[in-house]
Image (tube, rainbow, N blue to C red; front, side):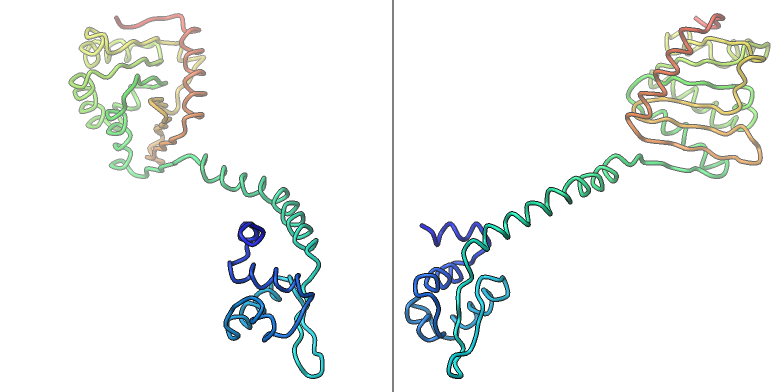
Amino acid sequence: MVKGELSKLGFSREEANVYTVLLGIGGGGASSIAKKAGSHRVTTYNTLENLEKKGFLRKTKKNGVLFYIPVDPATILRGAEDNYRVAKRLVPELVNLQNMRRFKPNVRFLEGKSRVGEIFDDMLECKGEIVGFVNFKYVSELYPDFLESYNEEALKKGKNHRFLCPNDEFHEEYFENNLIDLAENNLLKIFAVDPAKFVFKNAQYIYDNKVSTLSFDRNEMMGVIIESANNAETNRAIFDLAWLGATSFVGK
């Protein structure tokens, strides 16, 4: 029974057998230990060496012959208690390291006009509603082909949108000329806000667990897609708050 339980403390079956024999006889030479344990002498030598490395016995010489003496069994308990204290101190730090990796958001930087177009492709693959802040004047000037293609595909795929944009003459015309089909199919709702008070220098789109930002600066030509459920949820809440506060409605 004891020998079997020792395996739970890291003893091999042979180590448990030799160690319990040592405890019973109080120590001895390899030959006598092997005979008492019923083991081969060479195997017993290896086992005794392993037990010494683990700190469960010490050896000395008597009349020129190696003599093996078992260490007090309480050593096992003290060793387990020491290991527990070390584990209790280290495990929280290890968990923090794991969480840092687990919750690190996936960030994609898109440089150059062609790469920025990946944002529109990514939005078309989303499953839920797309919301965001956008200035169609800048987007249509910088990325006309991407935007036109996006509007057509969004209509075909039935993507739902809610956007906040500037309230000006350009956006009124752009809505009538380019977005009316999406609106008439109940796929687009827009609130237009005072451009003097709310300046949109970047476009931001929030969809599924992603937040994408599109630069309007001709010297930058870049976009960023951040994939993080918590980040997307927070930004969607900010958008909904802004949506509730908007006063001027354009669209159907």
